[in-house]
Image 1: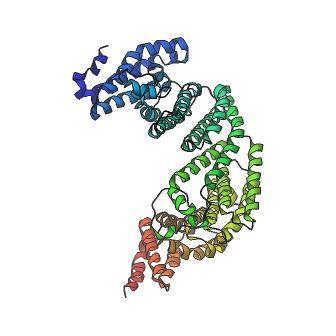
Image 2: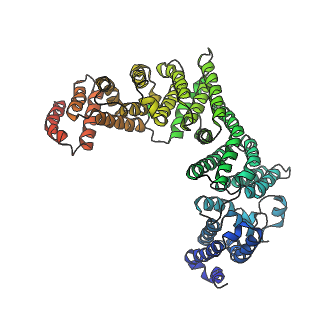
Image 3: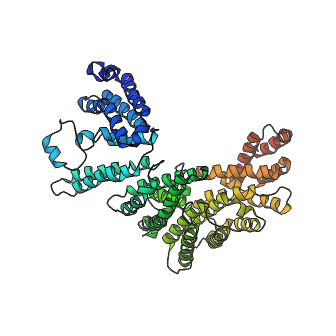
Length: 555
């Protein structure tokens, strides 16, 4: 009661300091009764103890008008939510009931939806739950029974004929805000075995709801969190029955989830591949420092939002593929490969479909769940796409992405004596057909291959001079990520060569090139090598001679 006096308005100038103290006290009380939160009687007792303080904070947010005071209250509420958990907090504060100070007409219009006095809580709940470390594990049943029930009411309210267009948008926004709380319940839920089988069916239906495209980000991201957490706990557990049962439940649910996510990926790609003219982009004409989604947007002709949604879905596919039954995964992969082969051999332009299937194949490769035969089959399927420039540039870029994923996730397959020579031949032989937009991924593939070289193998070392020209030219590329990848490849080549004098001679030979572009790339390469190997005795001895050679370019 003494700490509750801190909420008095005469202390408002100190709320930035005092309210977090009150919130911390609430969290301490809840943590001392943490075990009691697991049963109904203990939960009710804890709620009764922290209820007055929590309700007082929430009511205080409605009473104040200035931004500083509201920020202080929201910060304190965020501390409480992060400490006691969303379930306990919403056991005290109802999102459907206000403080009795809102306009009655407005309340009538929003019947069945979130109360106007409580709308500010939704973003606070989302941010606090994402960073919180609640004393008890969340329950999916609470999200399914409480949060989704509120979302359904908001959705029903948005369909009311009495609402204006703006009010309809507000209600649909509430639906998305409520759904955005799902990731907080997927971190380490306590009732996966009981609740997830039924909840997963709801998730499959919701993610395909065209009225709420934002769910395509939220639901797959939540599934990824859930699957990754359960897999990690299962691998770390030593025969724990509860963890093994949770793993089995999600594994079985993935059999229904994965086909739905595959279909969703095709839908997302299909909405952006209608016109060939709109998909061709010249992303080499500008210096782009964007993230992967933005680069895909320029290369694949889709908006950044669509690119992010595709990435969210493929990430979820990759994580679910790691825990789904292996026979089902292999069967799913075979179907993808059959459709990919049909699309690549079609006389019609199937670029969009090929890109979609390559994206799905990449997700499955990233799961590290495919066997060597499947990887070999996929490699044989993408090899013609890399060698050829007959398809749209998006296709080759996607093929290089898949190849890069194979190199990263299945390095033993790439570096084996059986396949390394074939990979090397593919990279060297496809330089003339490489599209501009594929350079970055091509260089990443080359880094993985070069790192597998043996410095004592003459055939391997003979490859380095053959690819040096491409590396030097890419150091001058307009794309920042391509330049950085070229530098990383240059350093990998120097490391595997393990003879700096010989390697410098290879680079210095480019100073005699006919084009200023190549000579400039050689100078940049030498500069980076000198910087990275500045403590190397051989490099220090070579430096005077190198400087004399470079200074010839001044003439």
